[in-house]
Length: 528
Image (cartoon, rainbow, N blue to C red; front, side):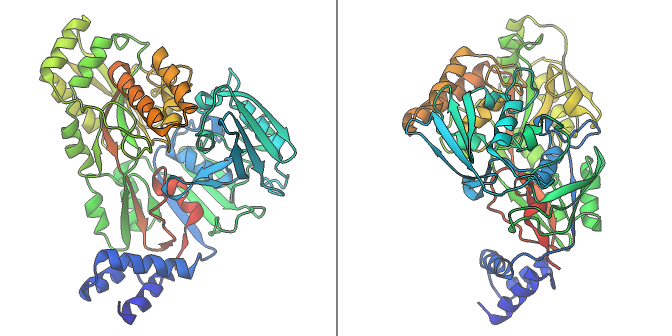
């Protein structure tokens, strides 16, 4: 590769020319995009993080009802905010690996029933207080009580006992679980002083930033935490998060330079946005999925035939084509896809108006079915709802659509109303996804799905160390959920982010949610 390109790649790394200009010159020299990007990535890594400056993020999902209590985080805005000021014991690394955060190491007993997490020595909270194993224990207790509203409750119910011994936090499980370290990556489980029992909204944690200004649903400002232990994070002096729930406004903010990065670039316009000067669009497939959720404990969705009628009455391929525009793949009424480590495909459910009509008549329900939706639930949700309405119409089923306000959708509609649009970003392993959203006792069981056989298989799979047997158990669980549950999953979405060329250090290998698992402002820097 020419010395000219090597020189230009370094100029990009230091923010002196744009990535787009570099790629254009590489193309003119006959260098493939793959080779050019590889050279550019090497140059950026060699240049290393640049310190100082401000990164502004335009992010969706925020609401005036949001709090900074980790237990109550329900959207991208609140989760990214947690990433700024706090850390869990363990975090998801590149390619679904695990990295220690508050815990420097962990180990399990031979049967995976007892796990020990060693807390980093001398790590401190942003208020200067040293983190102890007792703080970790108190955190887990707060997310475990029967009166808790924590989204991690489904995970914590598997713990039989826990204790703190010196720098060790020790967990004994009711049943063995080889995936427990993955479960500890849950973003609700941010370690707080005394577990957050004194003030869960205080935003005191071990993260690289301290929250200086908080306007829920509007704007947040964070400044560097002088006590942070990890120099590989927190490169900029200030992070500003601006809540922009409208897709068009969020894209316009990126294009005008008002913000440096955004999440959820609408698939419909992603290719157009990618052609704008000074902007790169990153797309990453994964476990994220856009869904229609029926609560199995609320009429008329407590009728299995009605649920099946709606599942046969949705045209999944049409939604993938017209809502995702190539940025995603076909769903099959299960939250598990090929991004999970122990995945087996199950028979694809096809659109069948005749079967939909058969089950609808068998259900005995008369009149329209009410669906609530909002742009805030997933990009294009109102349009997807309209497509669903049209496909059901061919089966003689009337779907009434009610468009709800964006603000308050996650507190007033999701997990409360009988039928609504929603999304899940997925989890790194099946056990965490199932335990969070489909275990009978999970607080975030937003379909109110309760199946004894499913629960038994989930518990048994945790302690099964034979991968082949465990894989079959997860396949069986997907079949049960697909046939009996309240989940309609027509599509798995790619995470599509828009990023200014002034941002350095973007890592496309990061696992998890979009915007580098919502760590982008923590791990990137101002390149020029």
